Length: 212
Length: 213
Image 1 (cartoon, rainbow over the protein chains, first blue to last red):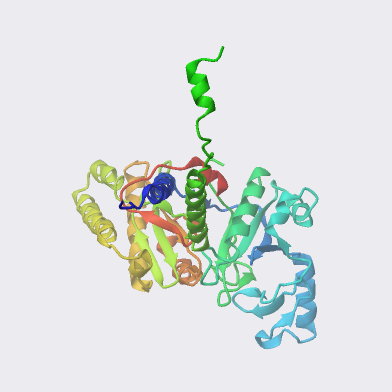
Image 2: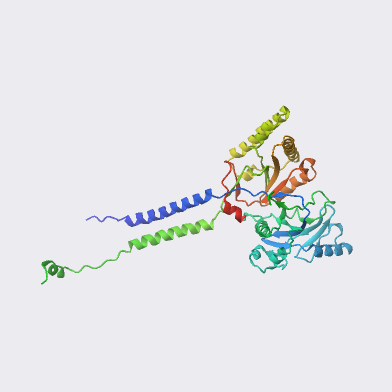
């Protein structure tokens, strides 16, 4: 008597797998269609508020202590270390400074690993974190936060190195009614603080919606 | 007294109870297969695509979008509400000028829609003269809207992609020294590489995503 090979089990396995894959594909498709996004459009506004400068790089942030930085830069300039666009250590957040006639004081932030002055943006979730304490000092009536956001990125990444930290911090500041502005920076276009008398590009403006 | 049937059953040969592993194996292998598939998918996980609208406005302010990419810019000018301004204008010369701007812009959008490749390849290096012309054009439109009491103002919205800062700075340098740019409002937003333009009209806004943002 001929023995028939039973393919029931194989058919069952294949149809089960195919069915589940089809369900997965449909779910993915539905999710894909719902990710359309309309950009928020904060617009730069002239303001009497004074900026508190923050640098965002590699998912970390540093709130610039301008008093300390300017005092240090002035000392370096006095003893000649900052002459001729020479780069000098600011002894703050492993930052290096450079003085330029057009751009004022420029900040080099090459190697920030291990610095205690830089804080990972996830620190915002902790109530008692140093980052929160520093941001909470910003007075919304008198100040706004201005971010220098590094947009340089490794090829495998989809976001600029400071984008995520900037977005999260901006959201946190918004919840505290603190306005913020930003500009992208990189190794060619460094973060810099200067006065409008230097150049018309020395503008630091908060961006927000007309209604806010 | 035992019935005939029960007596017969007592003498039936005993049959071994066979357990079939088939349903268990079937489910087990199916689950394993799907899990491995998901595992492979997540290992080559491509980030979710987010699409942005080509026409954006906030009240009477309408965005003239400039997407700044590593190799250049993509310009997405607004068109739809510009037609209202054209209708409101009485001066024939201005009307004609606006008509020609609308035609140009429509062509621009049509070119973007017709382009099937990656948007990155569509980006062009910013040309100083072109930027100056665009600024002049936006200023002209805004001034005419003001003259004719039409609630319409174009502003430049920069969408900065990763590594797109260099191109952005080139444009801002031009704008910094341009009289036409002085009266134009500016907005800028950081964009991730997986955020693309929706060229098939305004997409539905996903409130959750906006909250995340």
